[in-house]
Image (cartoon, rainbow, N blue to C red; front, side, top):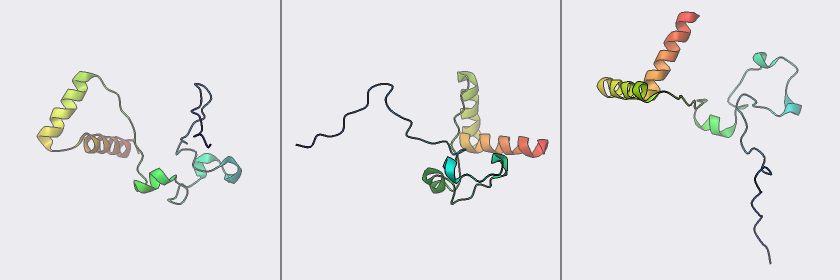
Length: 96
């Protein structure tokens, strides 16, 4: 009789996800510093490849700011994603 594998007890499970900031196995890493390693579509994990190289970021904010953002999005017909991405890009271009 084959039983399904048991669920690991608390503290036994290992991480099932890997950071996209660490795209290669340690043994396969080039000897160049990490900031010089170019991330290409072939080195990104499958979940990032499917999103066309996009990475999800979570933003926490207070309720009042969220409500203002939500209503601004309704008035301007923009998603929170578009509003925040445009603001971040604008800030980064200004600082460059």
